[in-house]
Image (cartoon, rainbow, N blue to C red; front, top):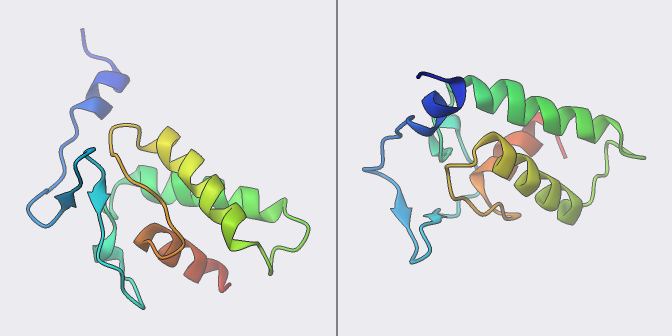
Length: 109
């Protein structure tokens, strides 16, 4: 029987450029400026733009000062959202990660 959840689990990503640590988490090279190509998932995956970025944008709008969101808070919330949107991609969100770099550049923070 085919289901949407099974389809999500069968998605494969080009892993030729990705490196993984001993626990299976993606290892990133830290850069000063990231592009969409640096993301650990394809940028044309609608889960990136609609679910992850959309959810983080909604969360940011609920903050007392949307122009000054503490980096620590953004990292924690981004990890929670990442784990829900991409449960099959082991990734640790850090303050220097591509995911934070790209999303926060959209906020101009």
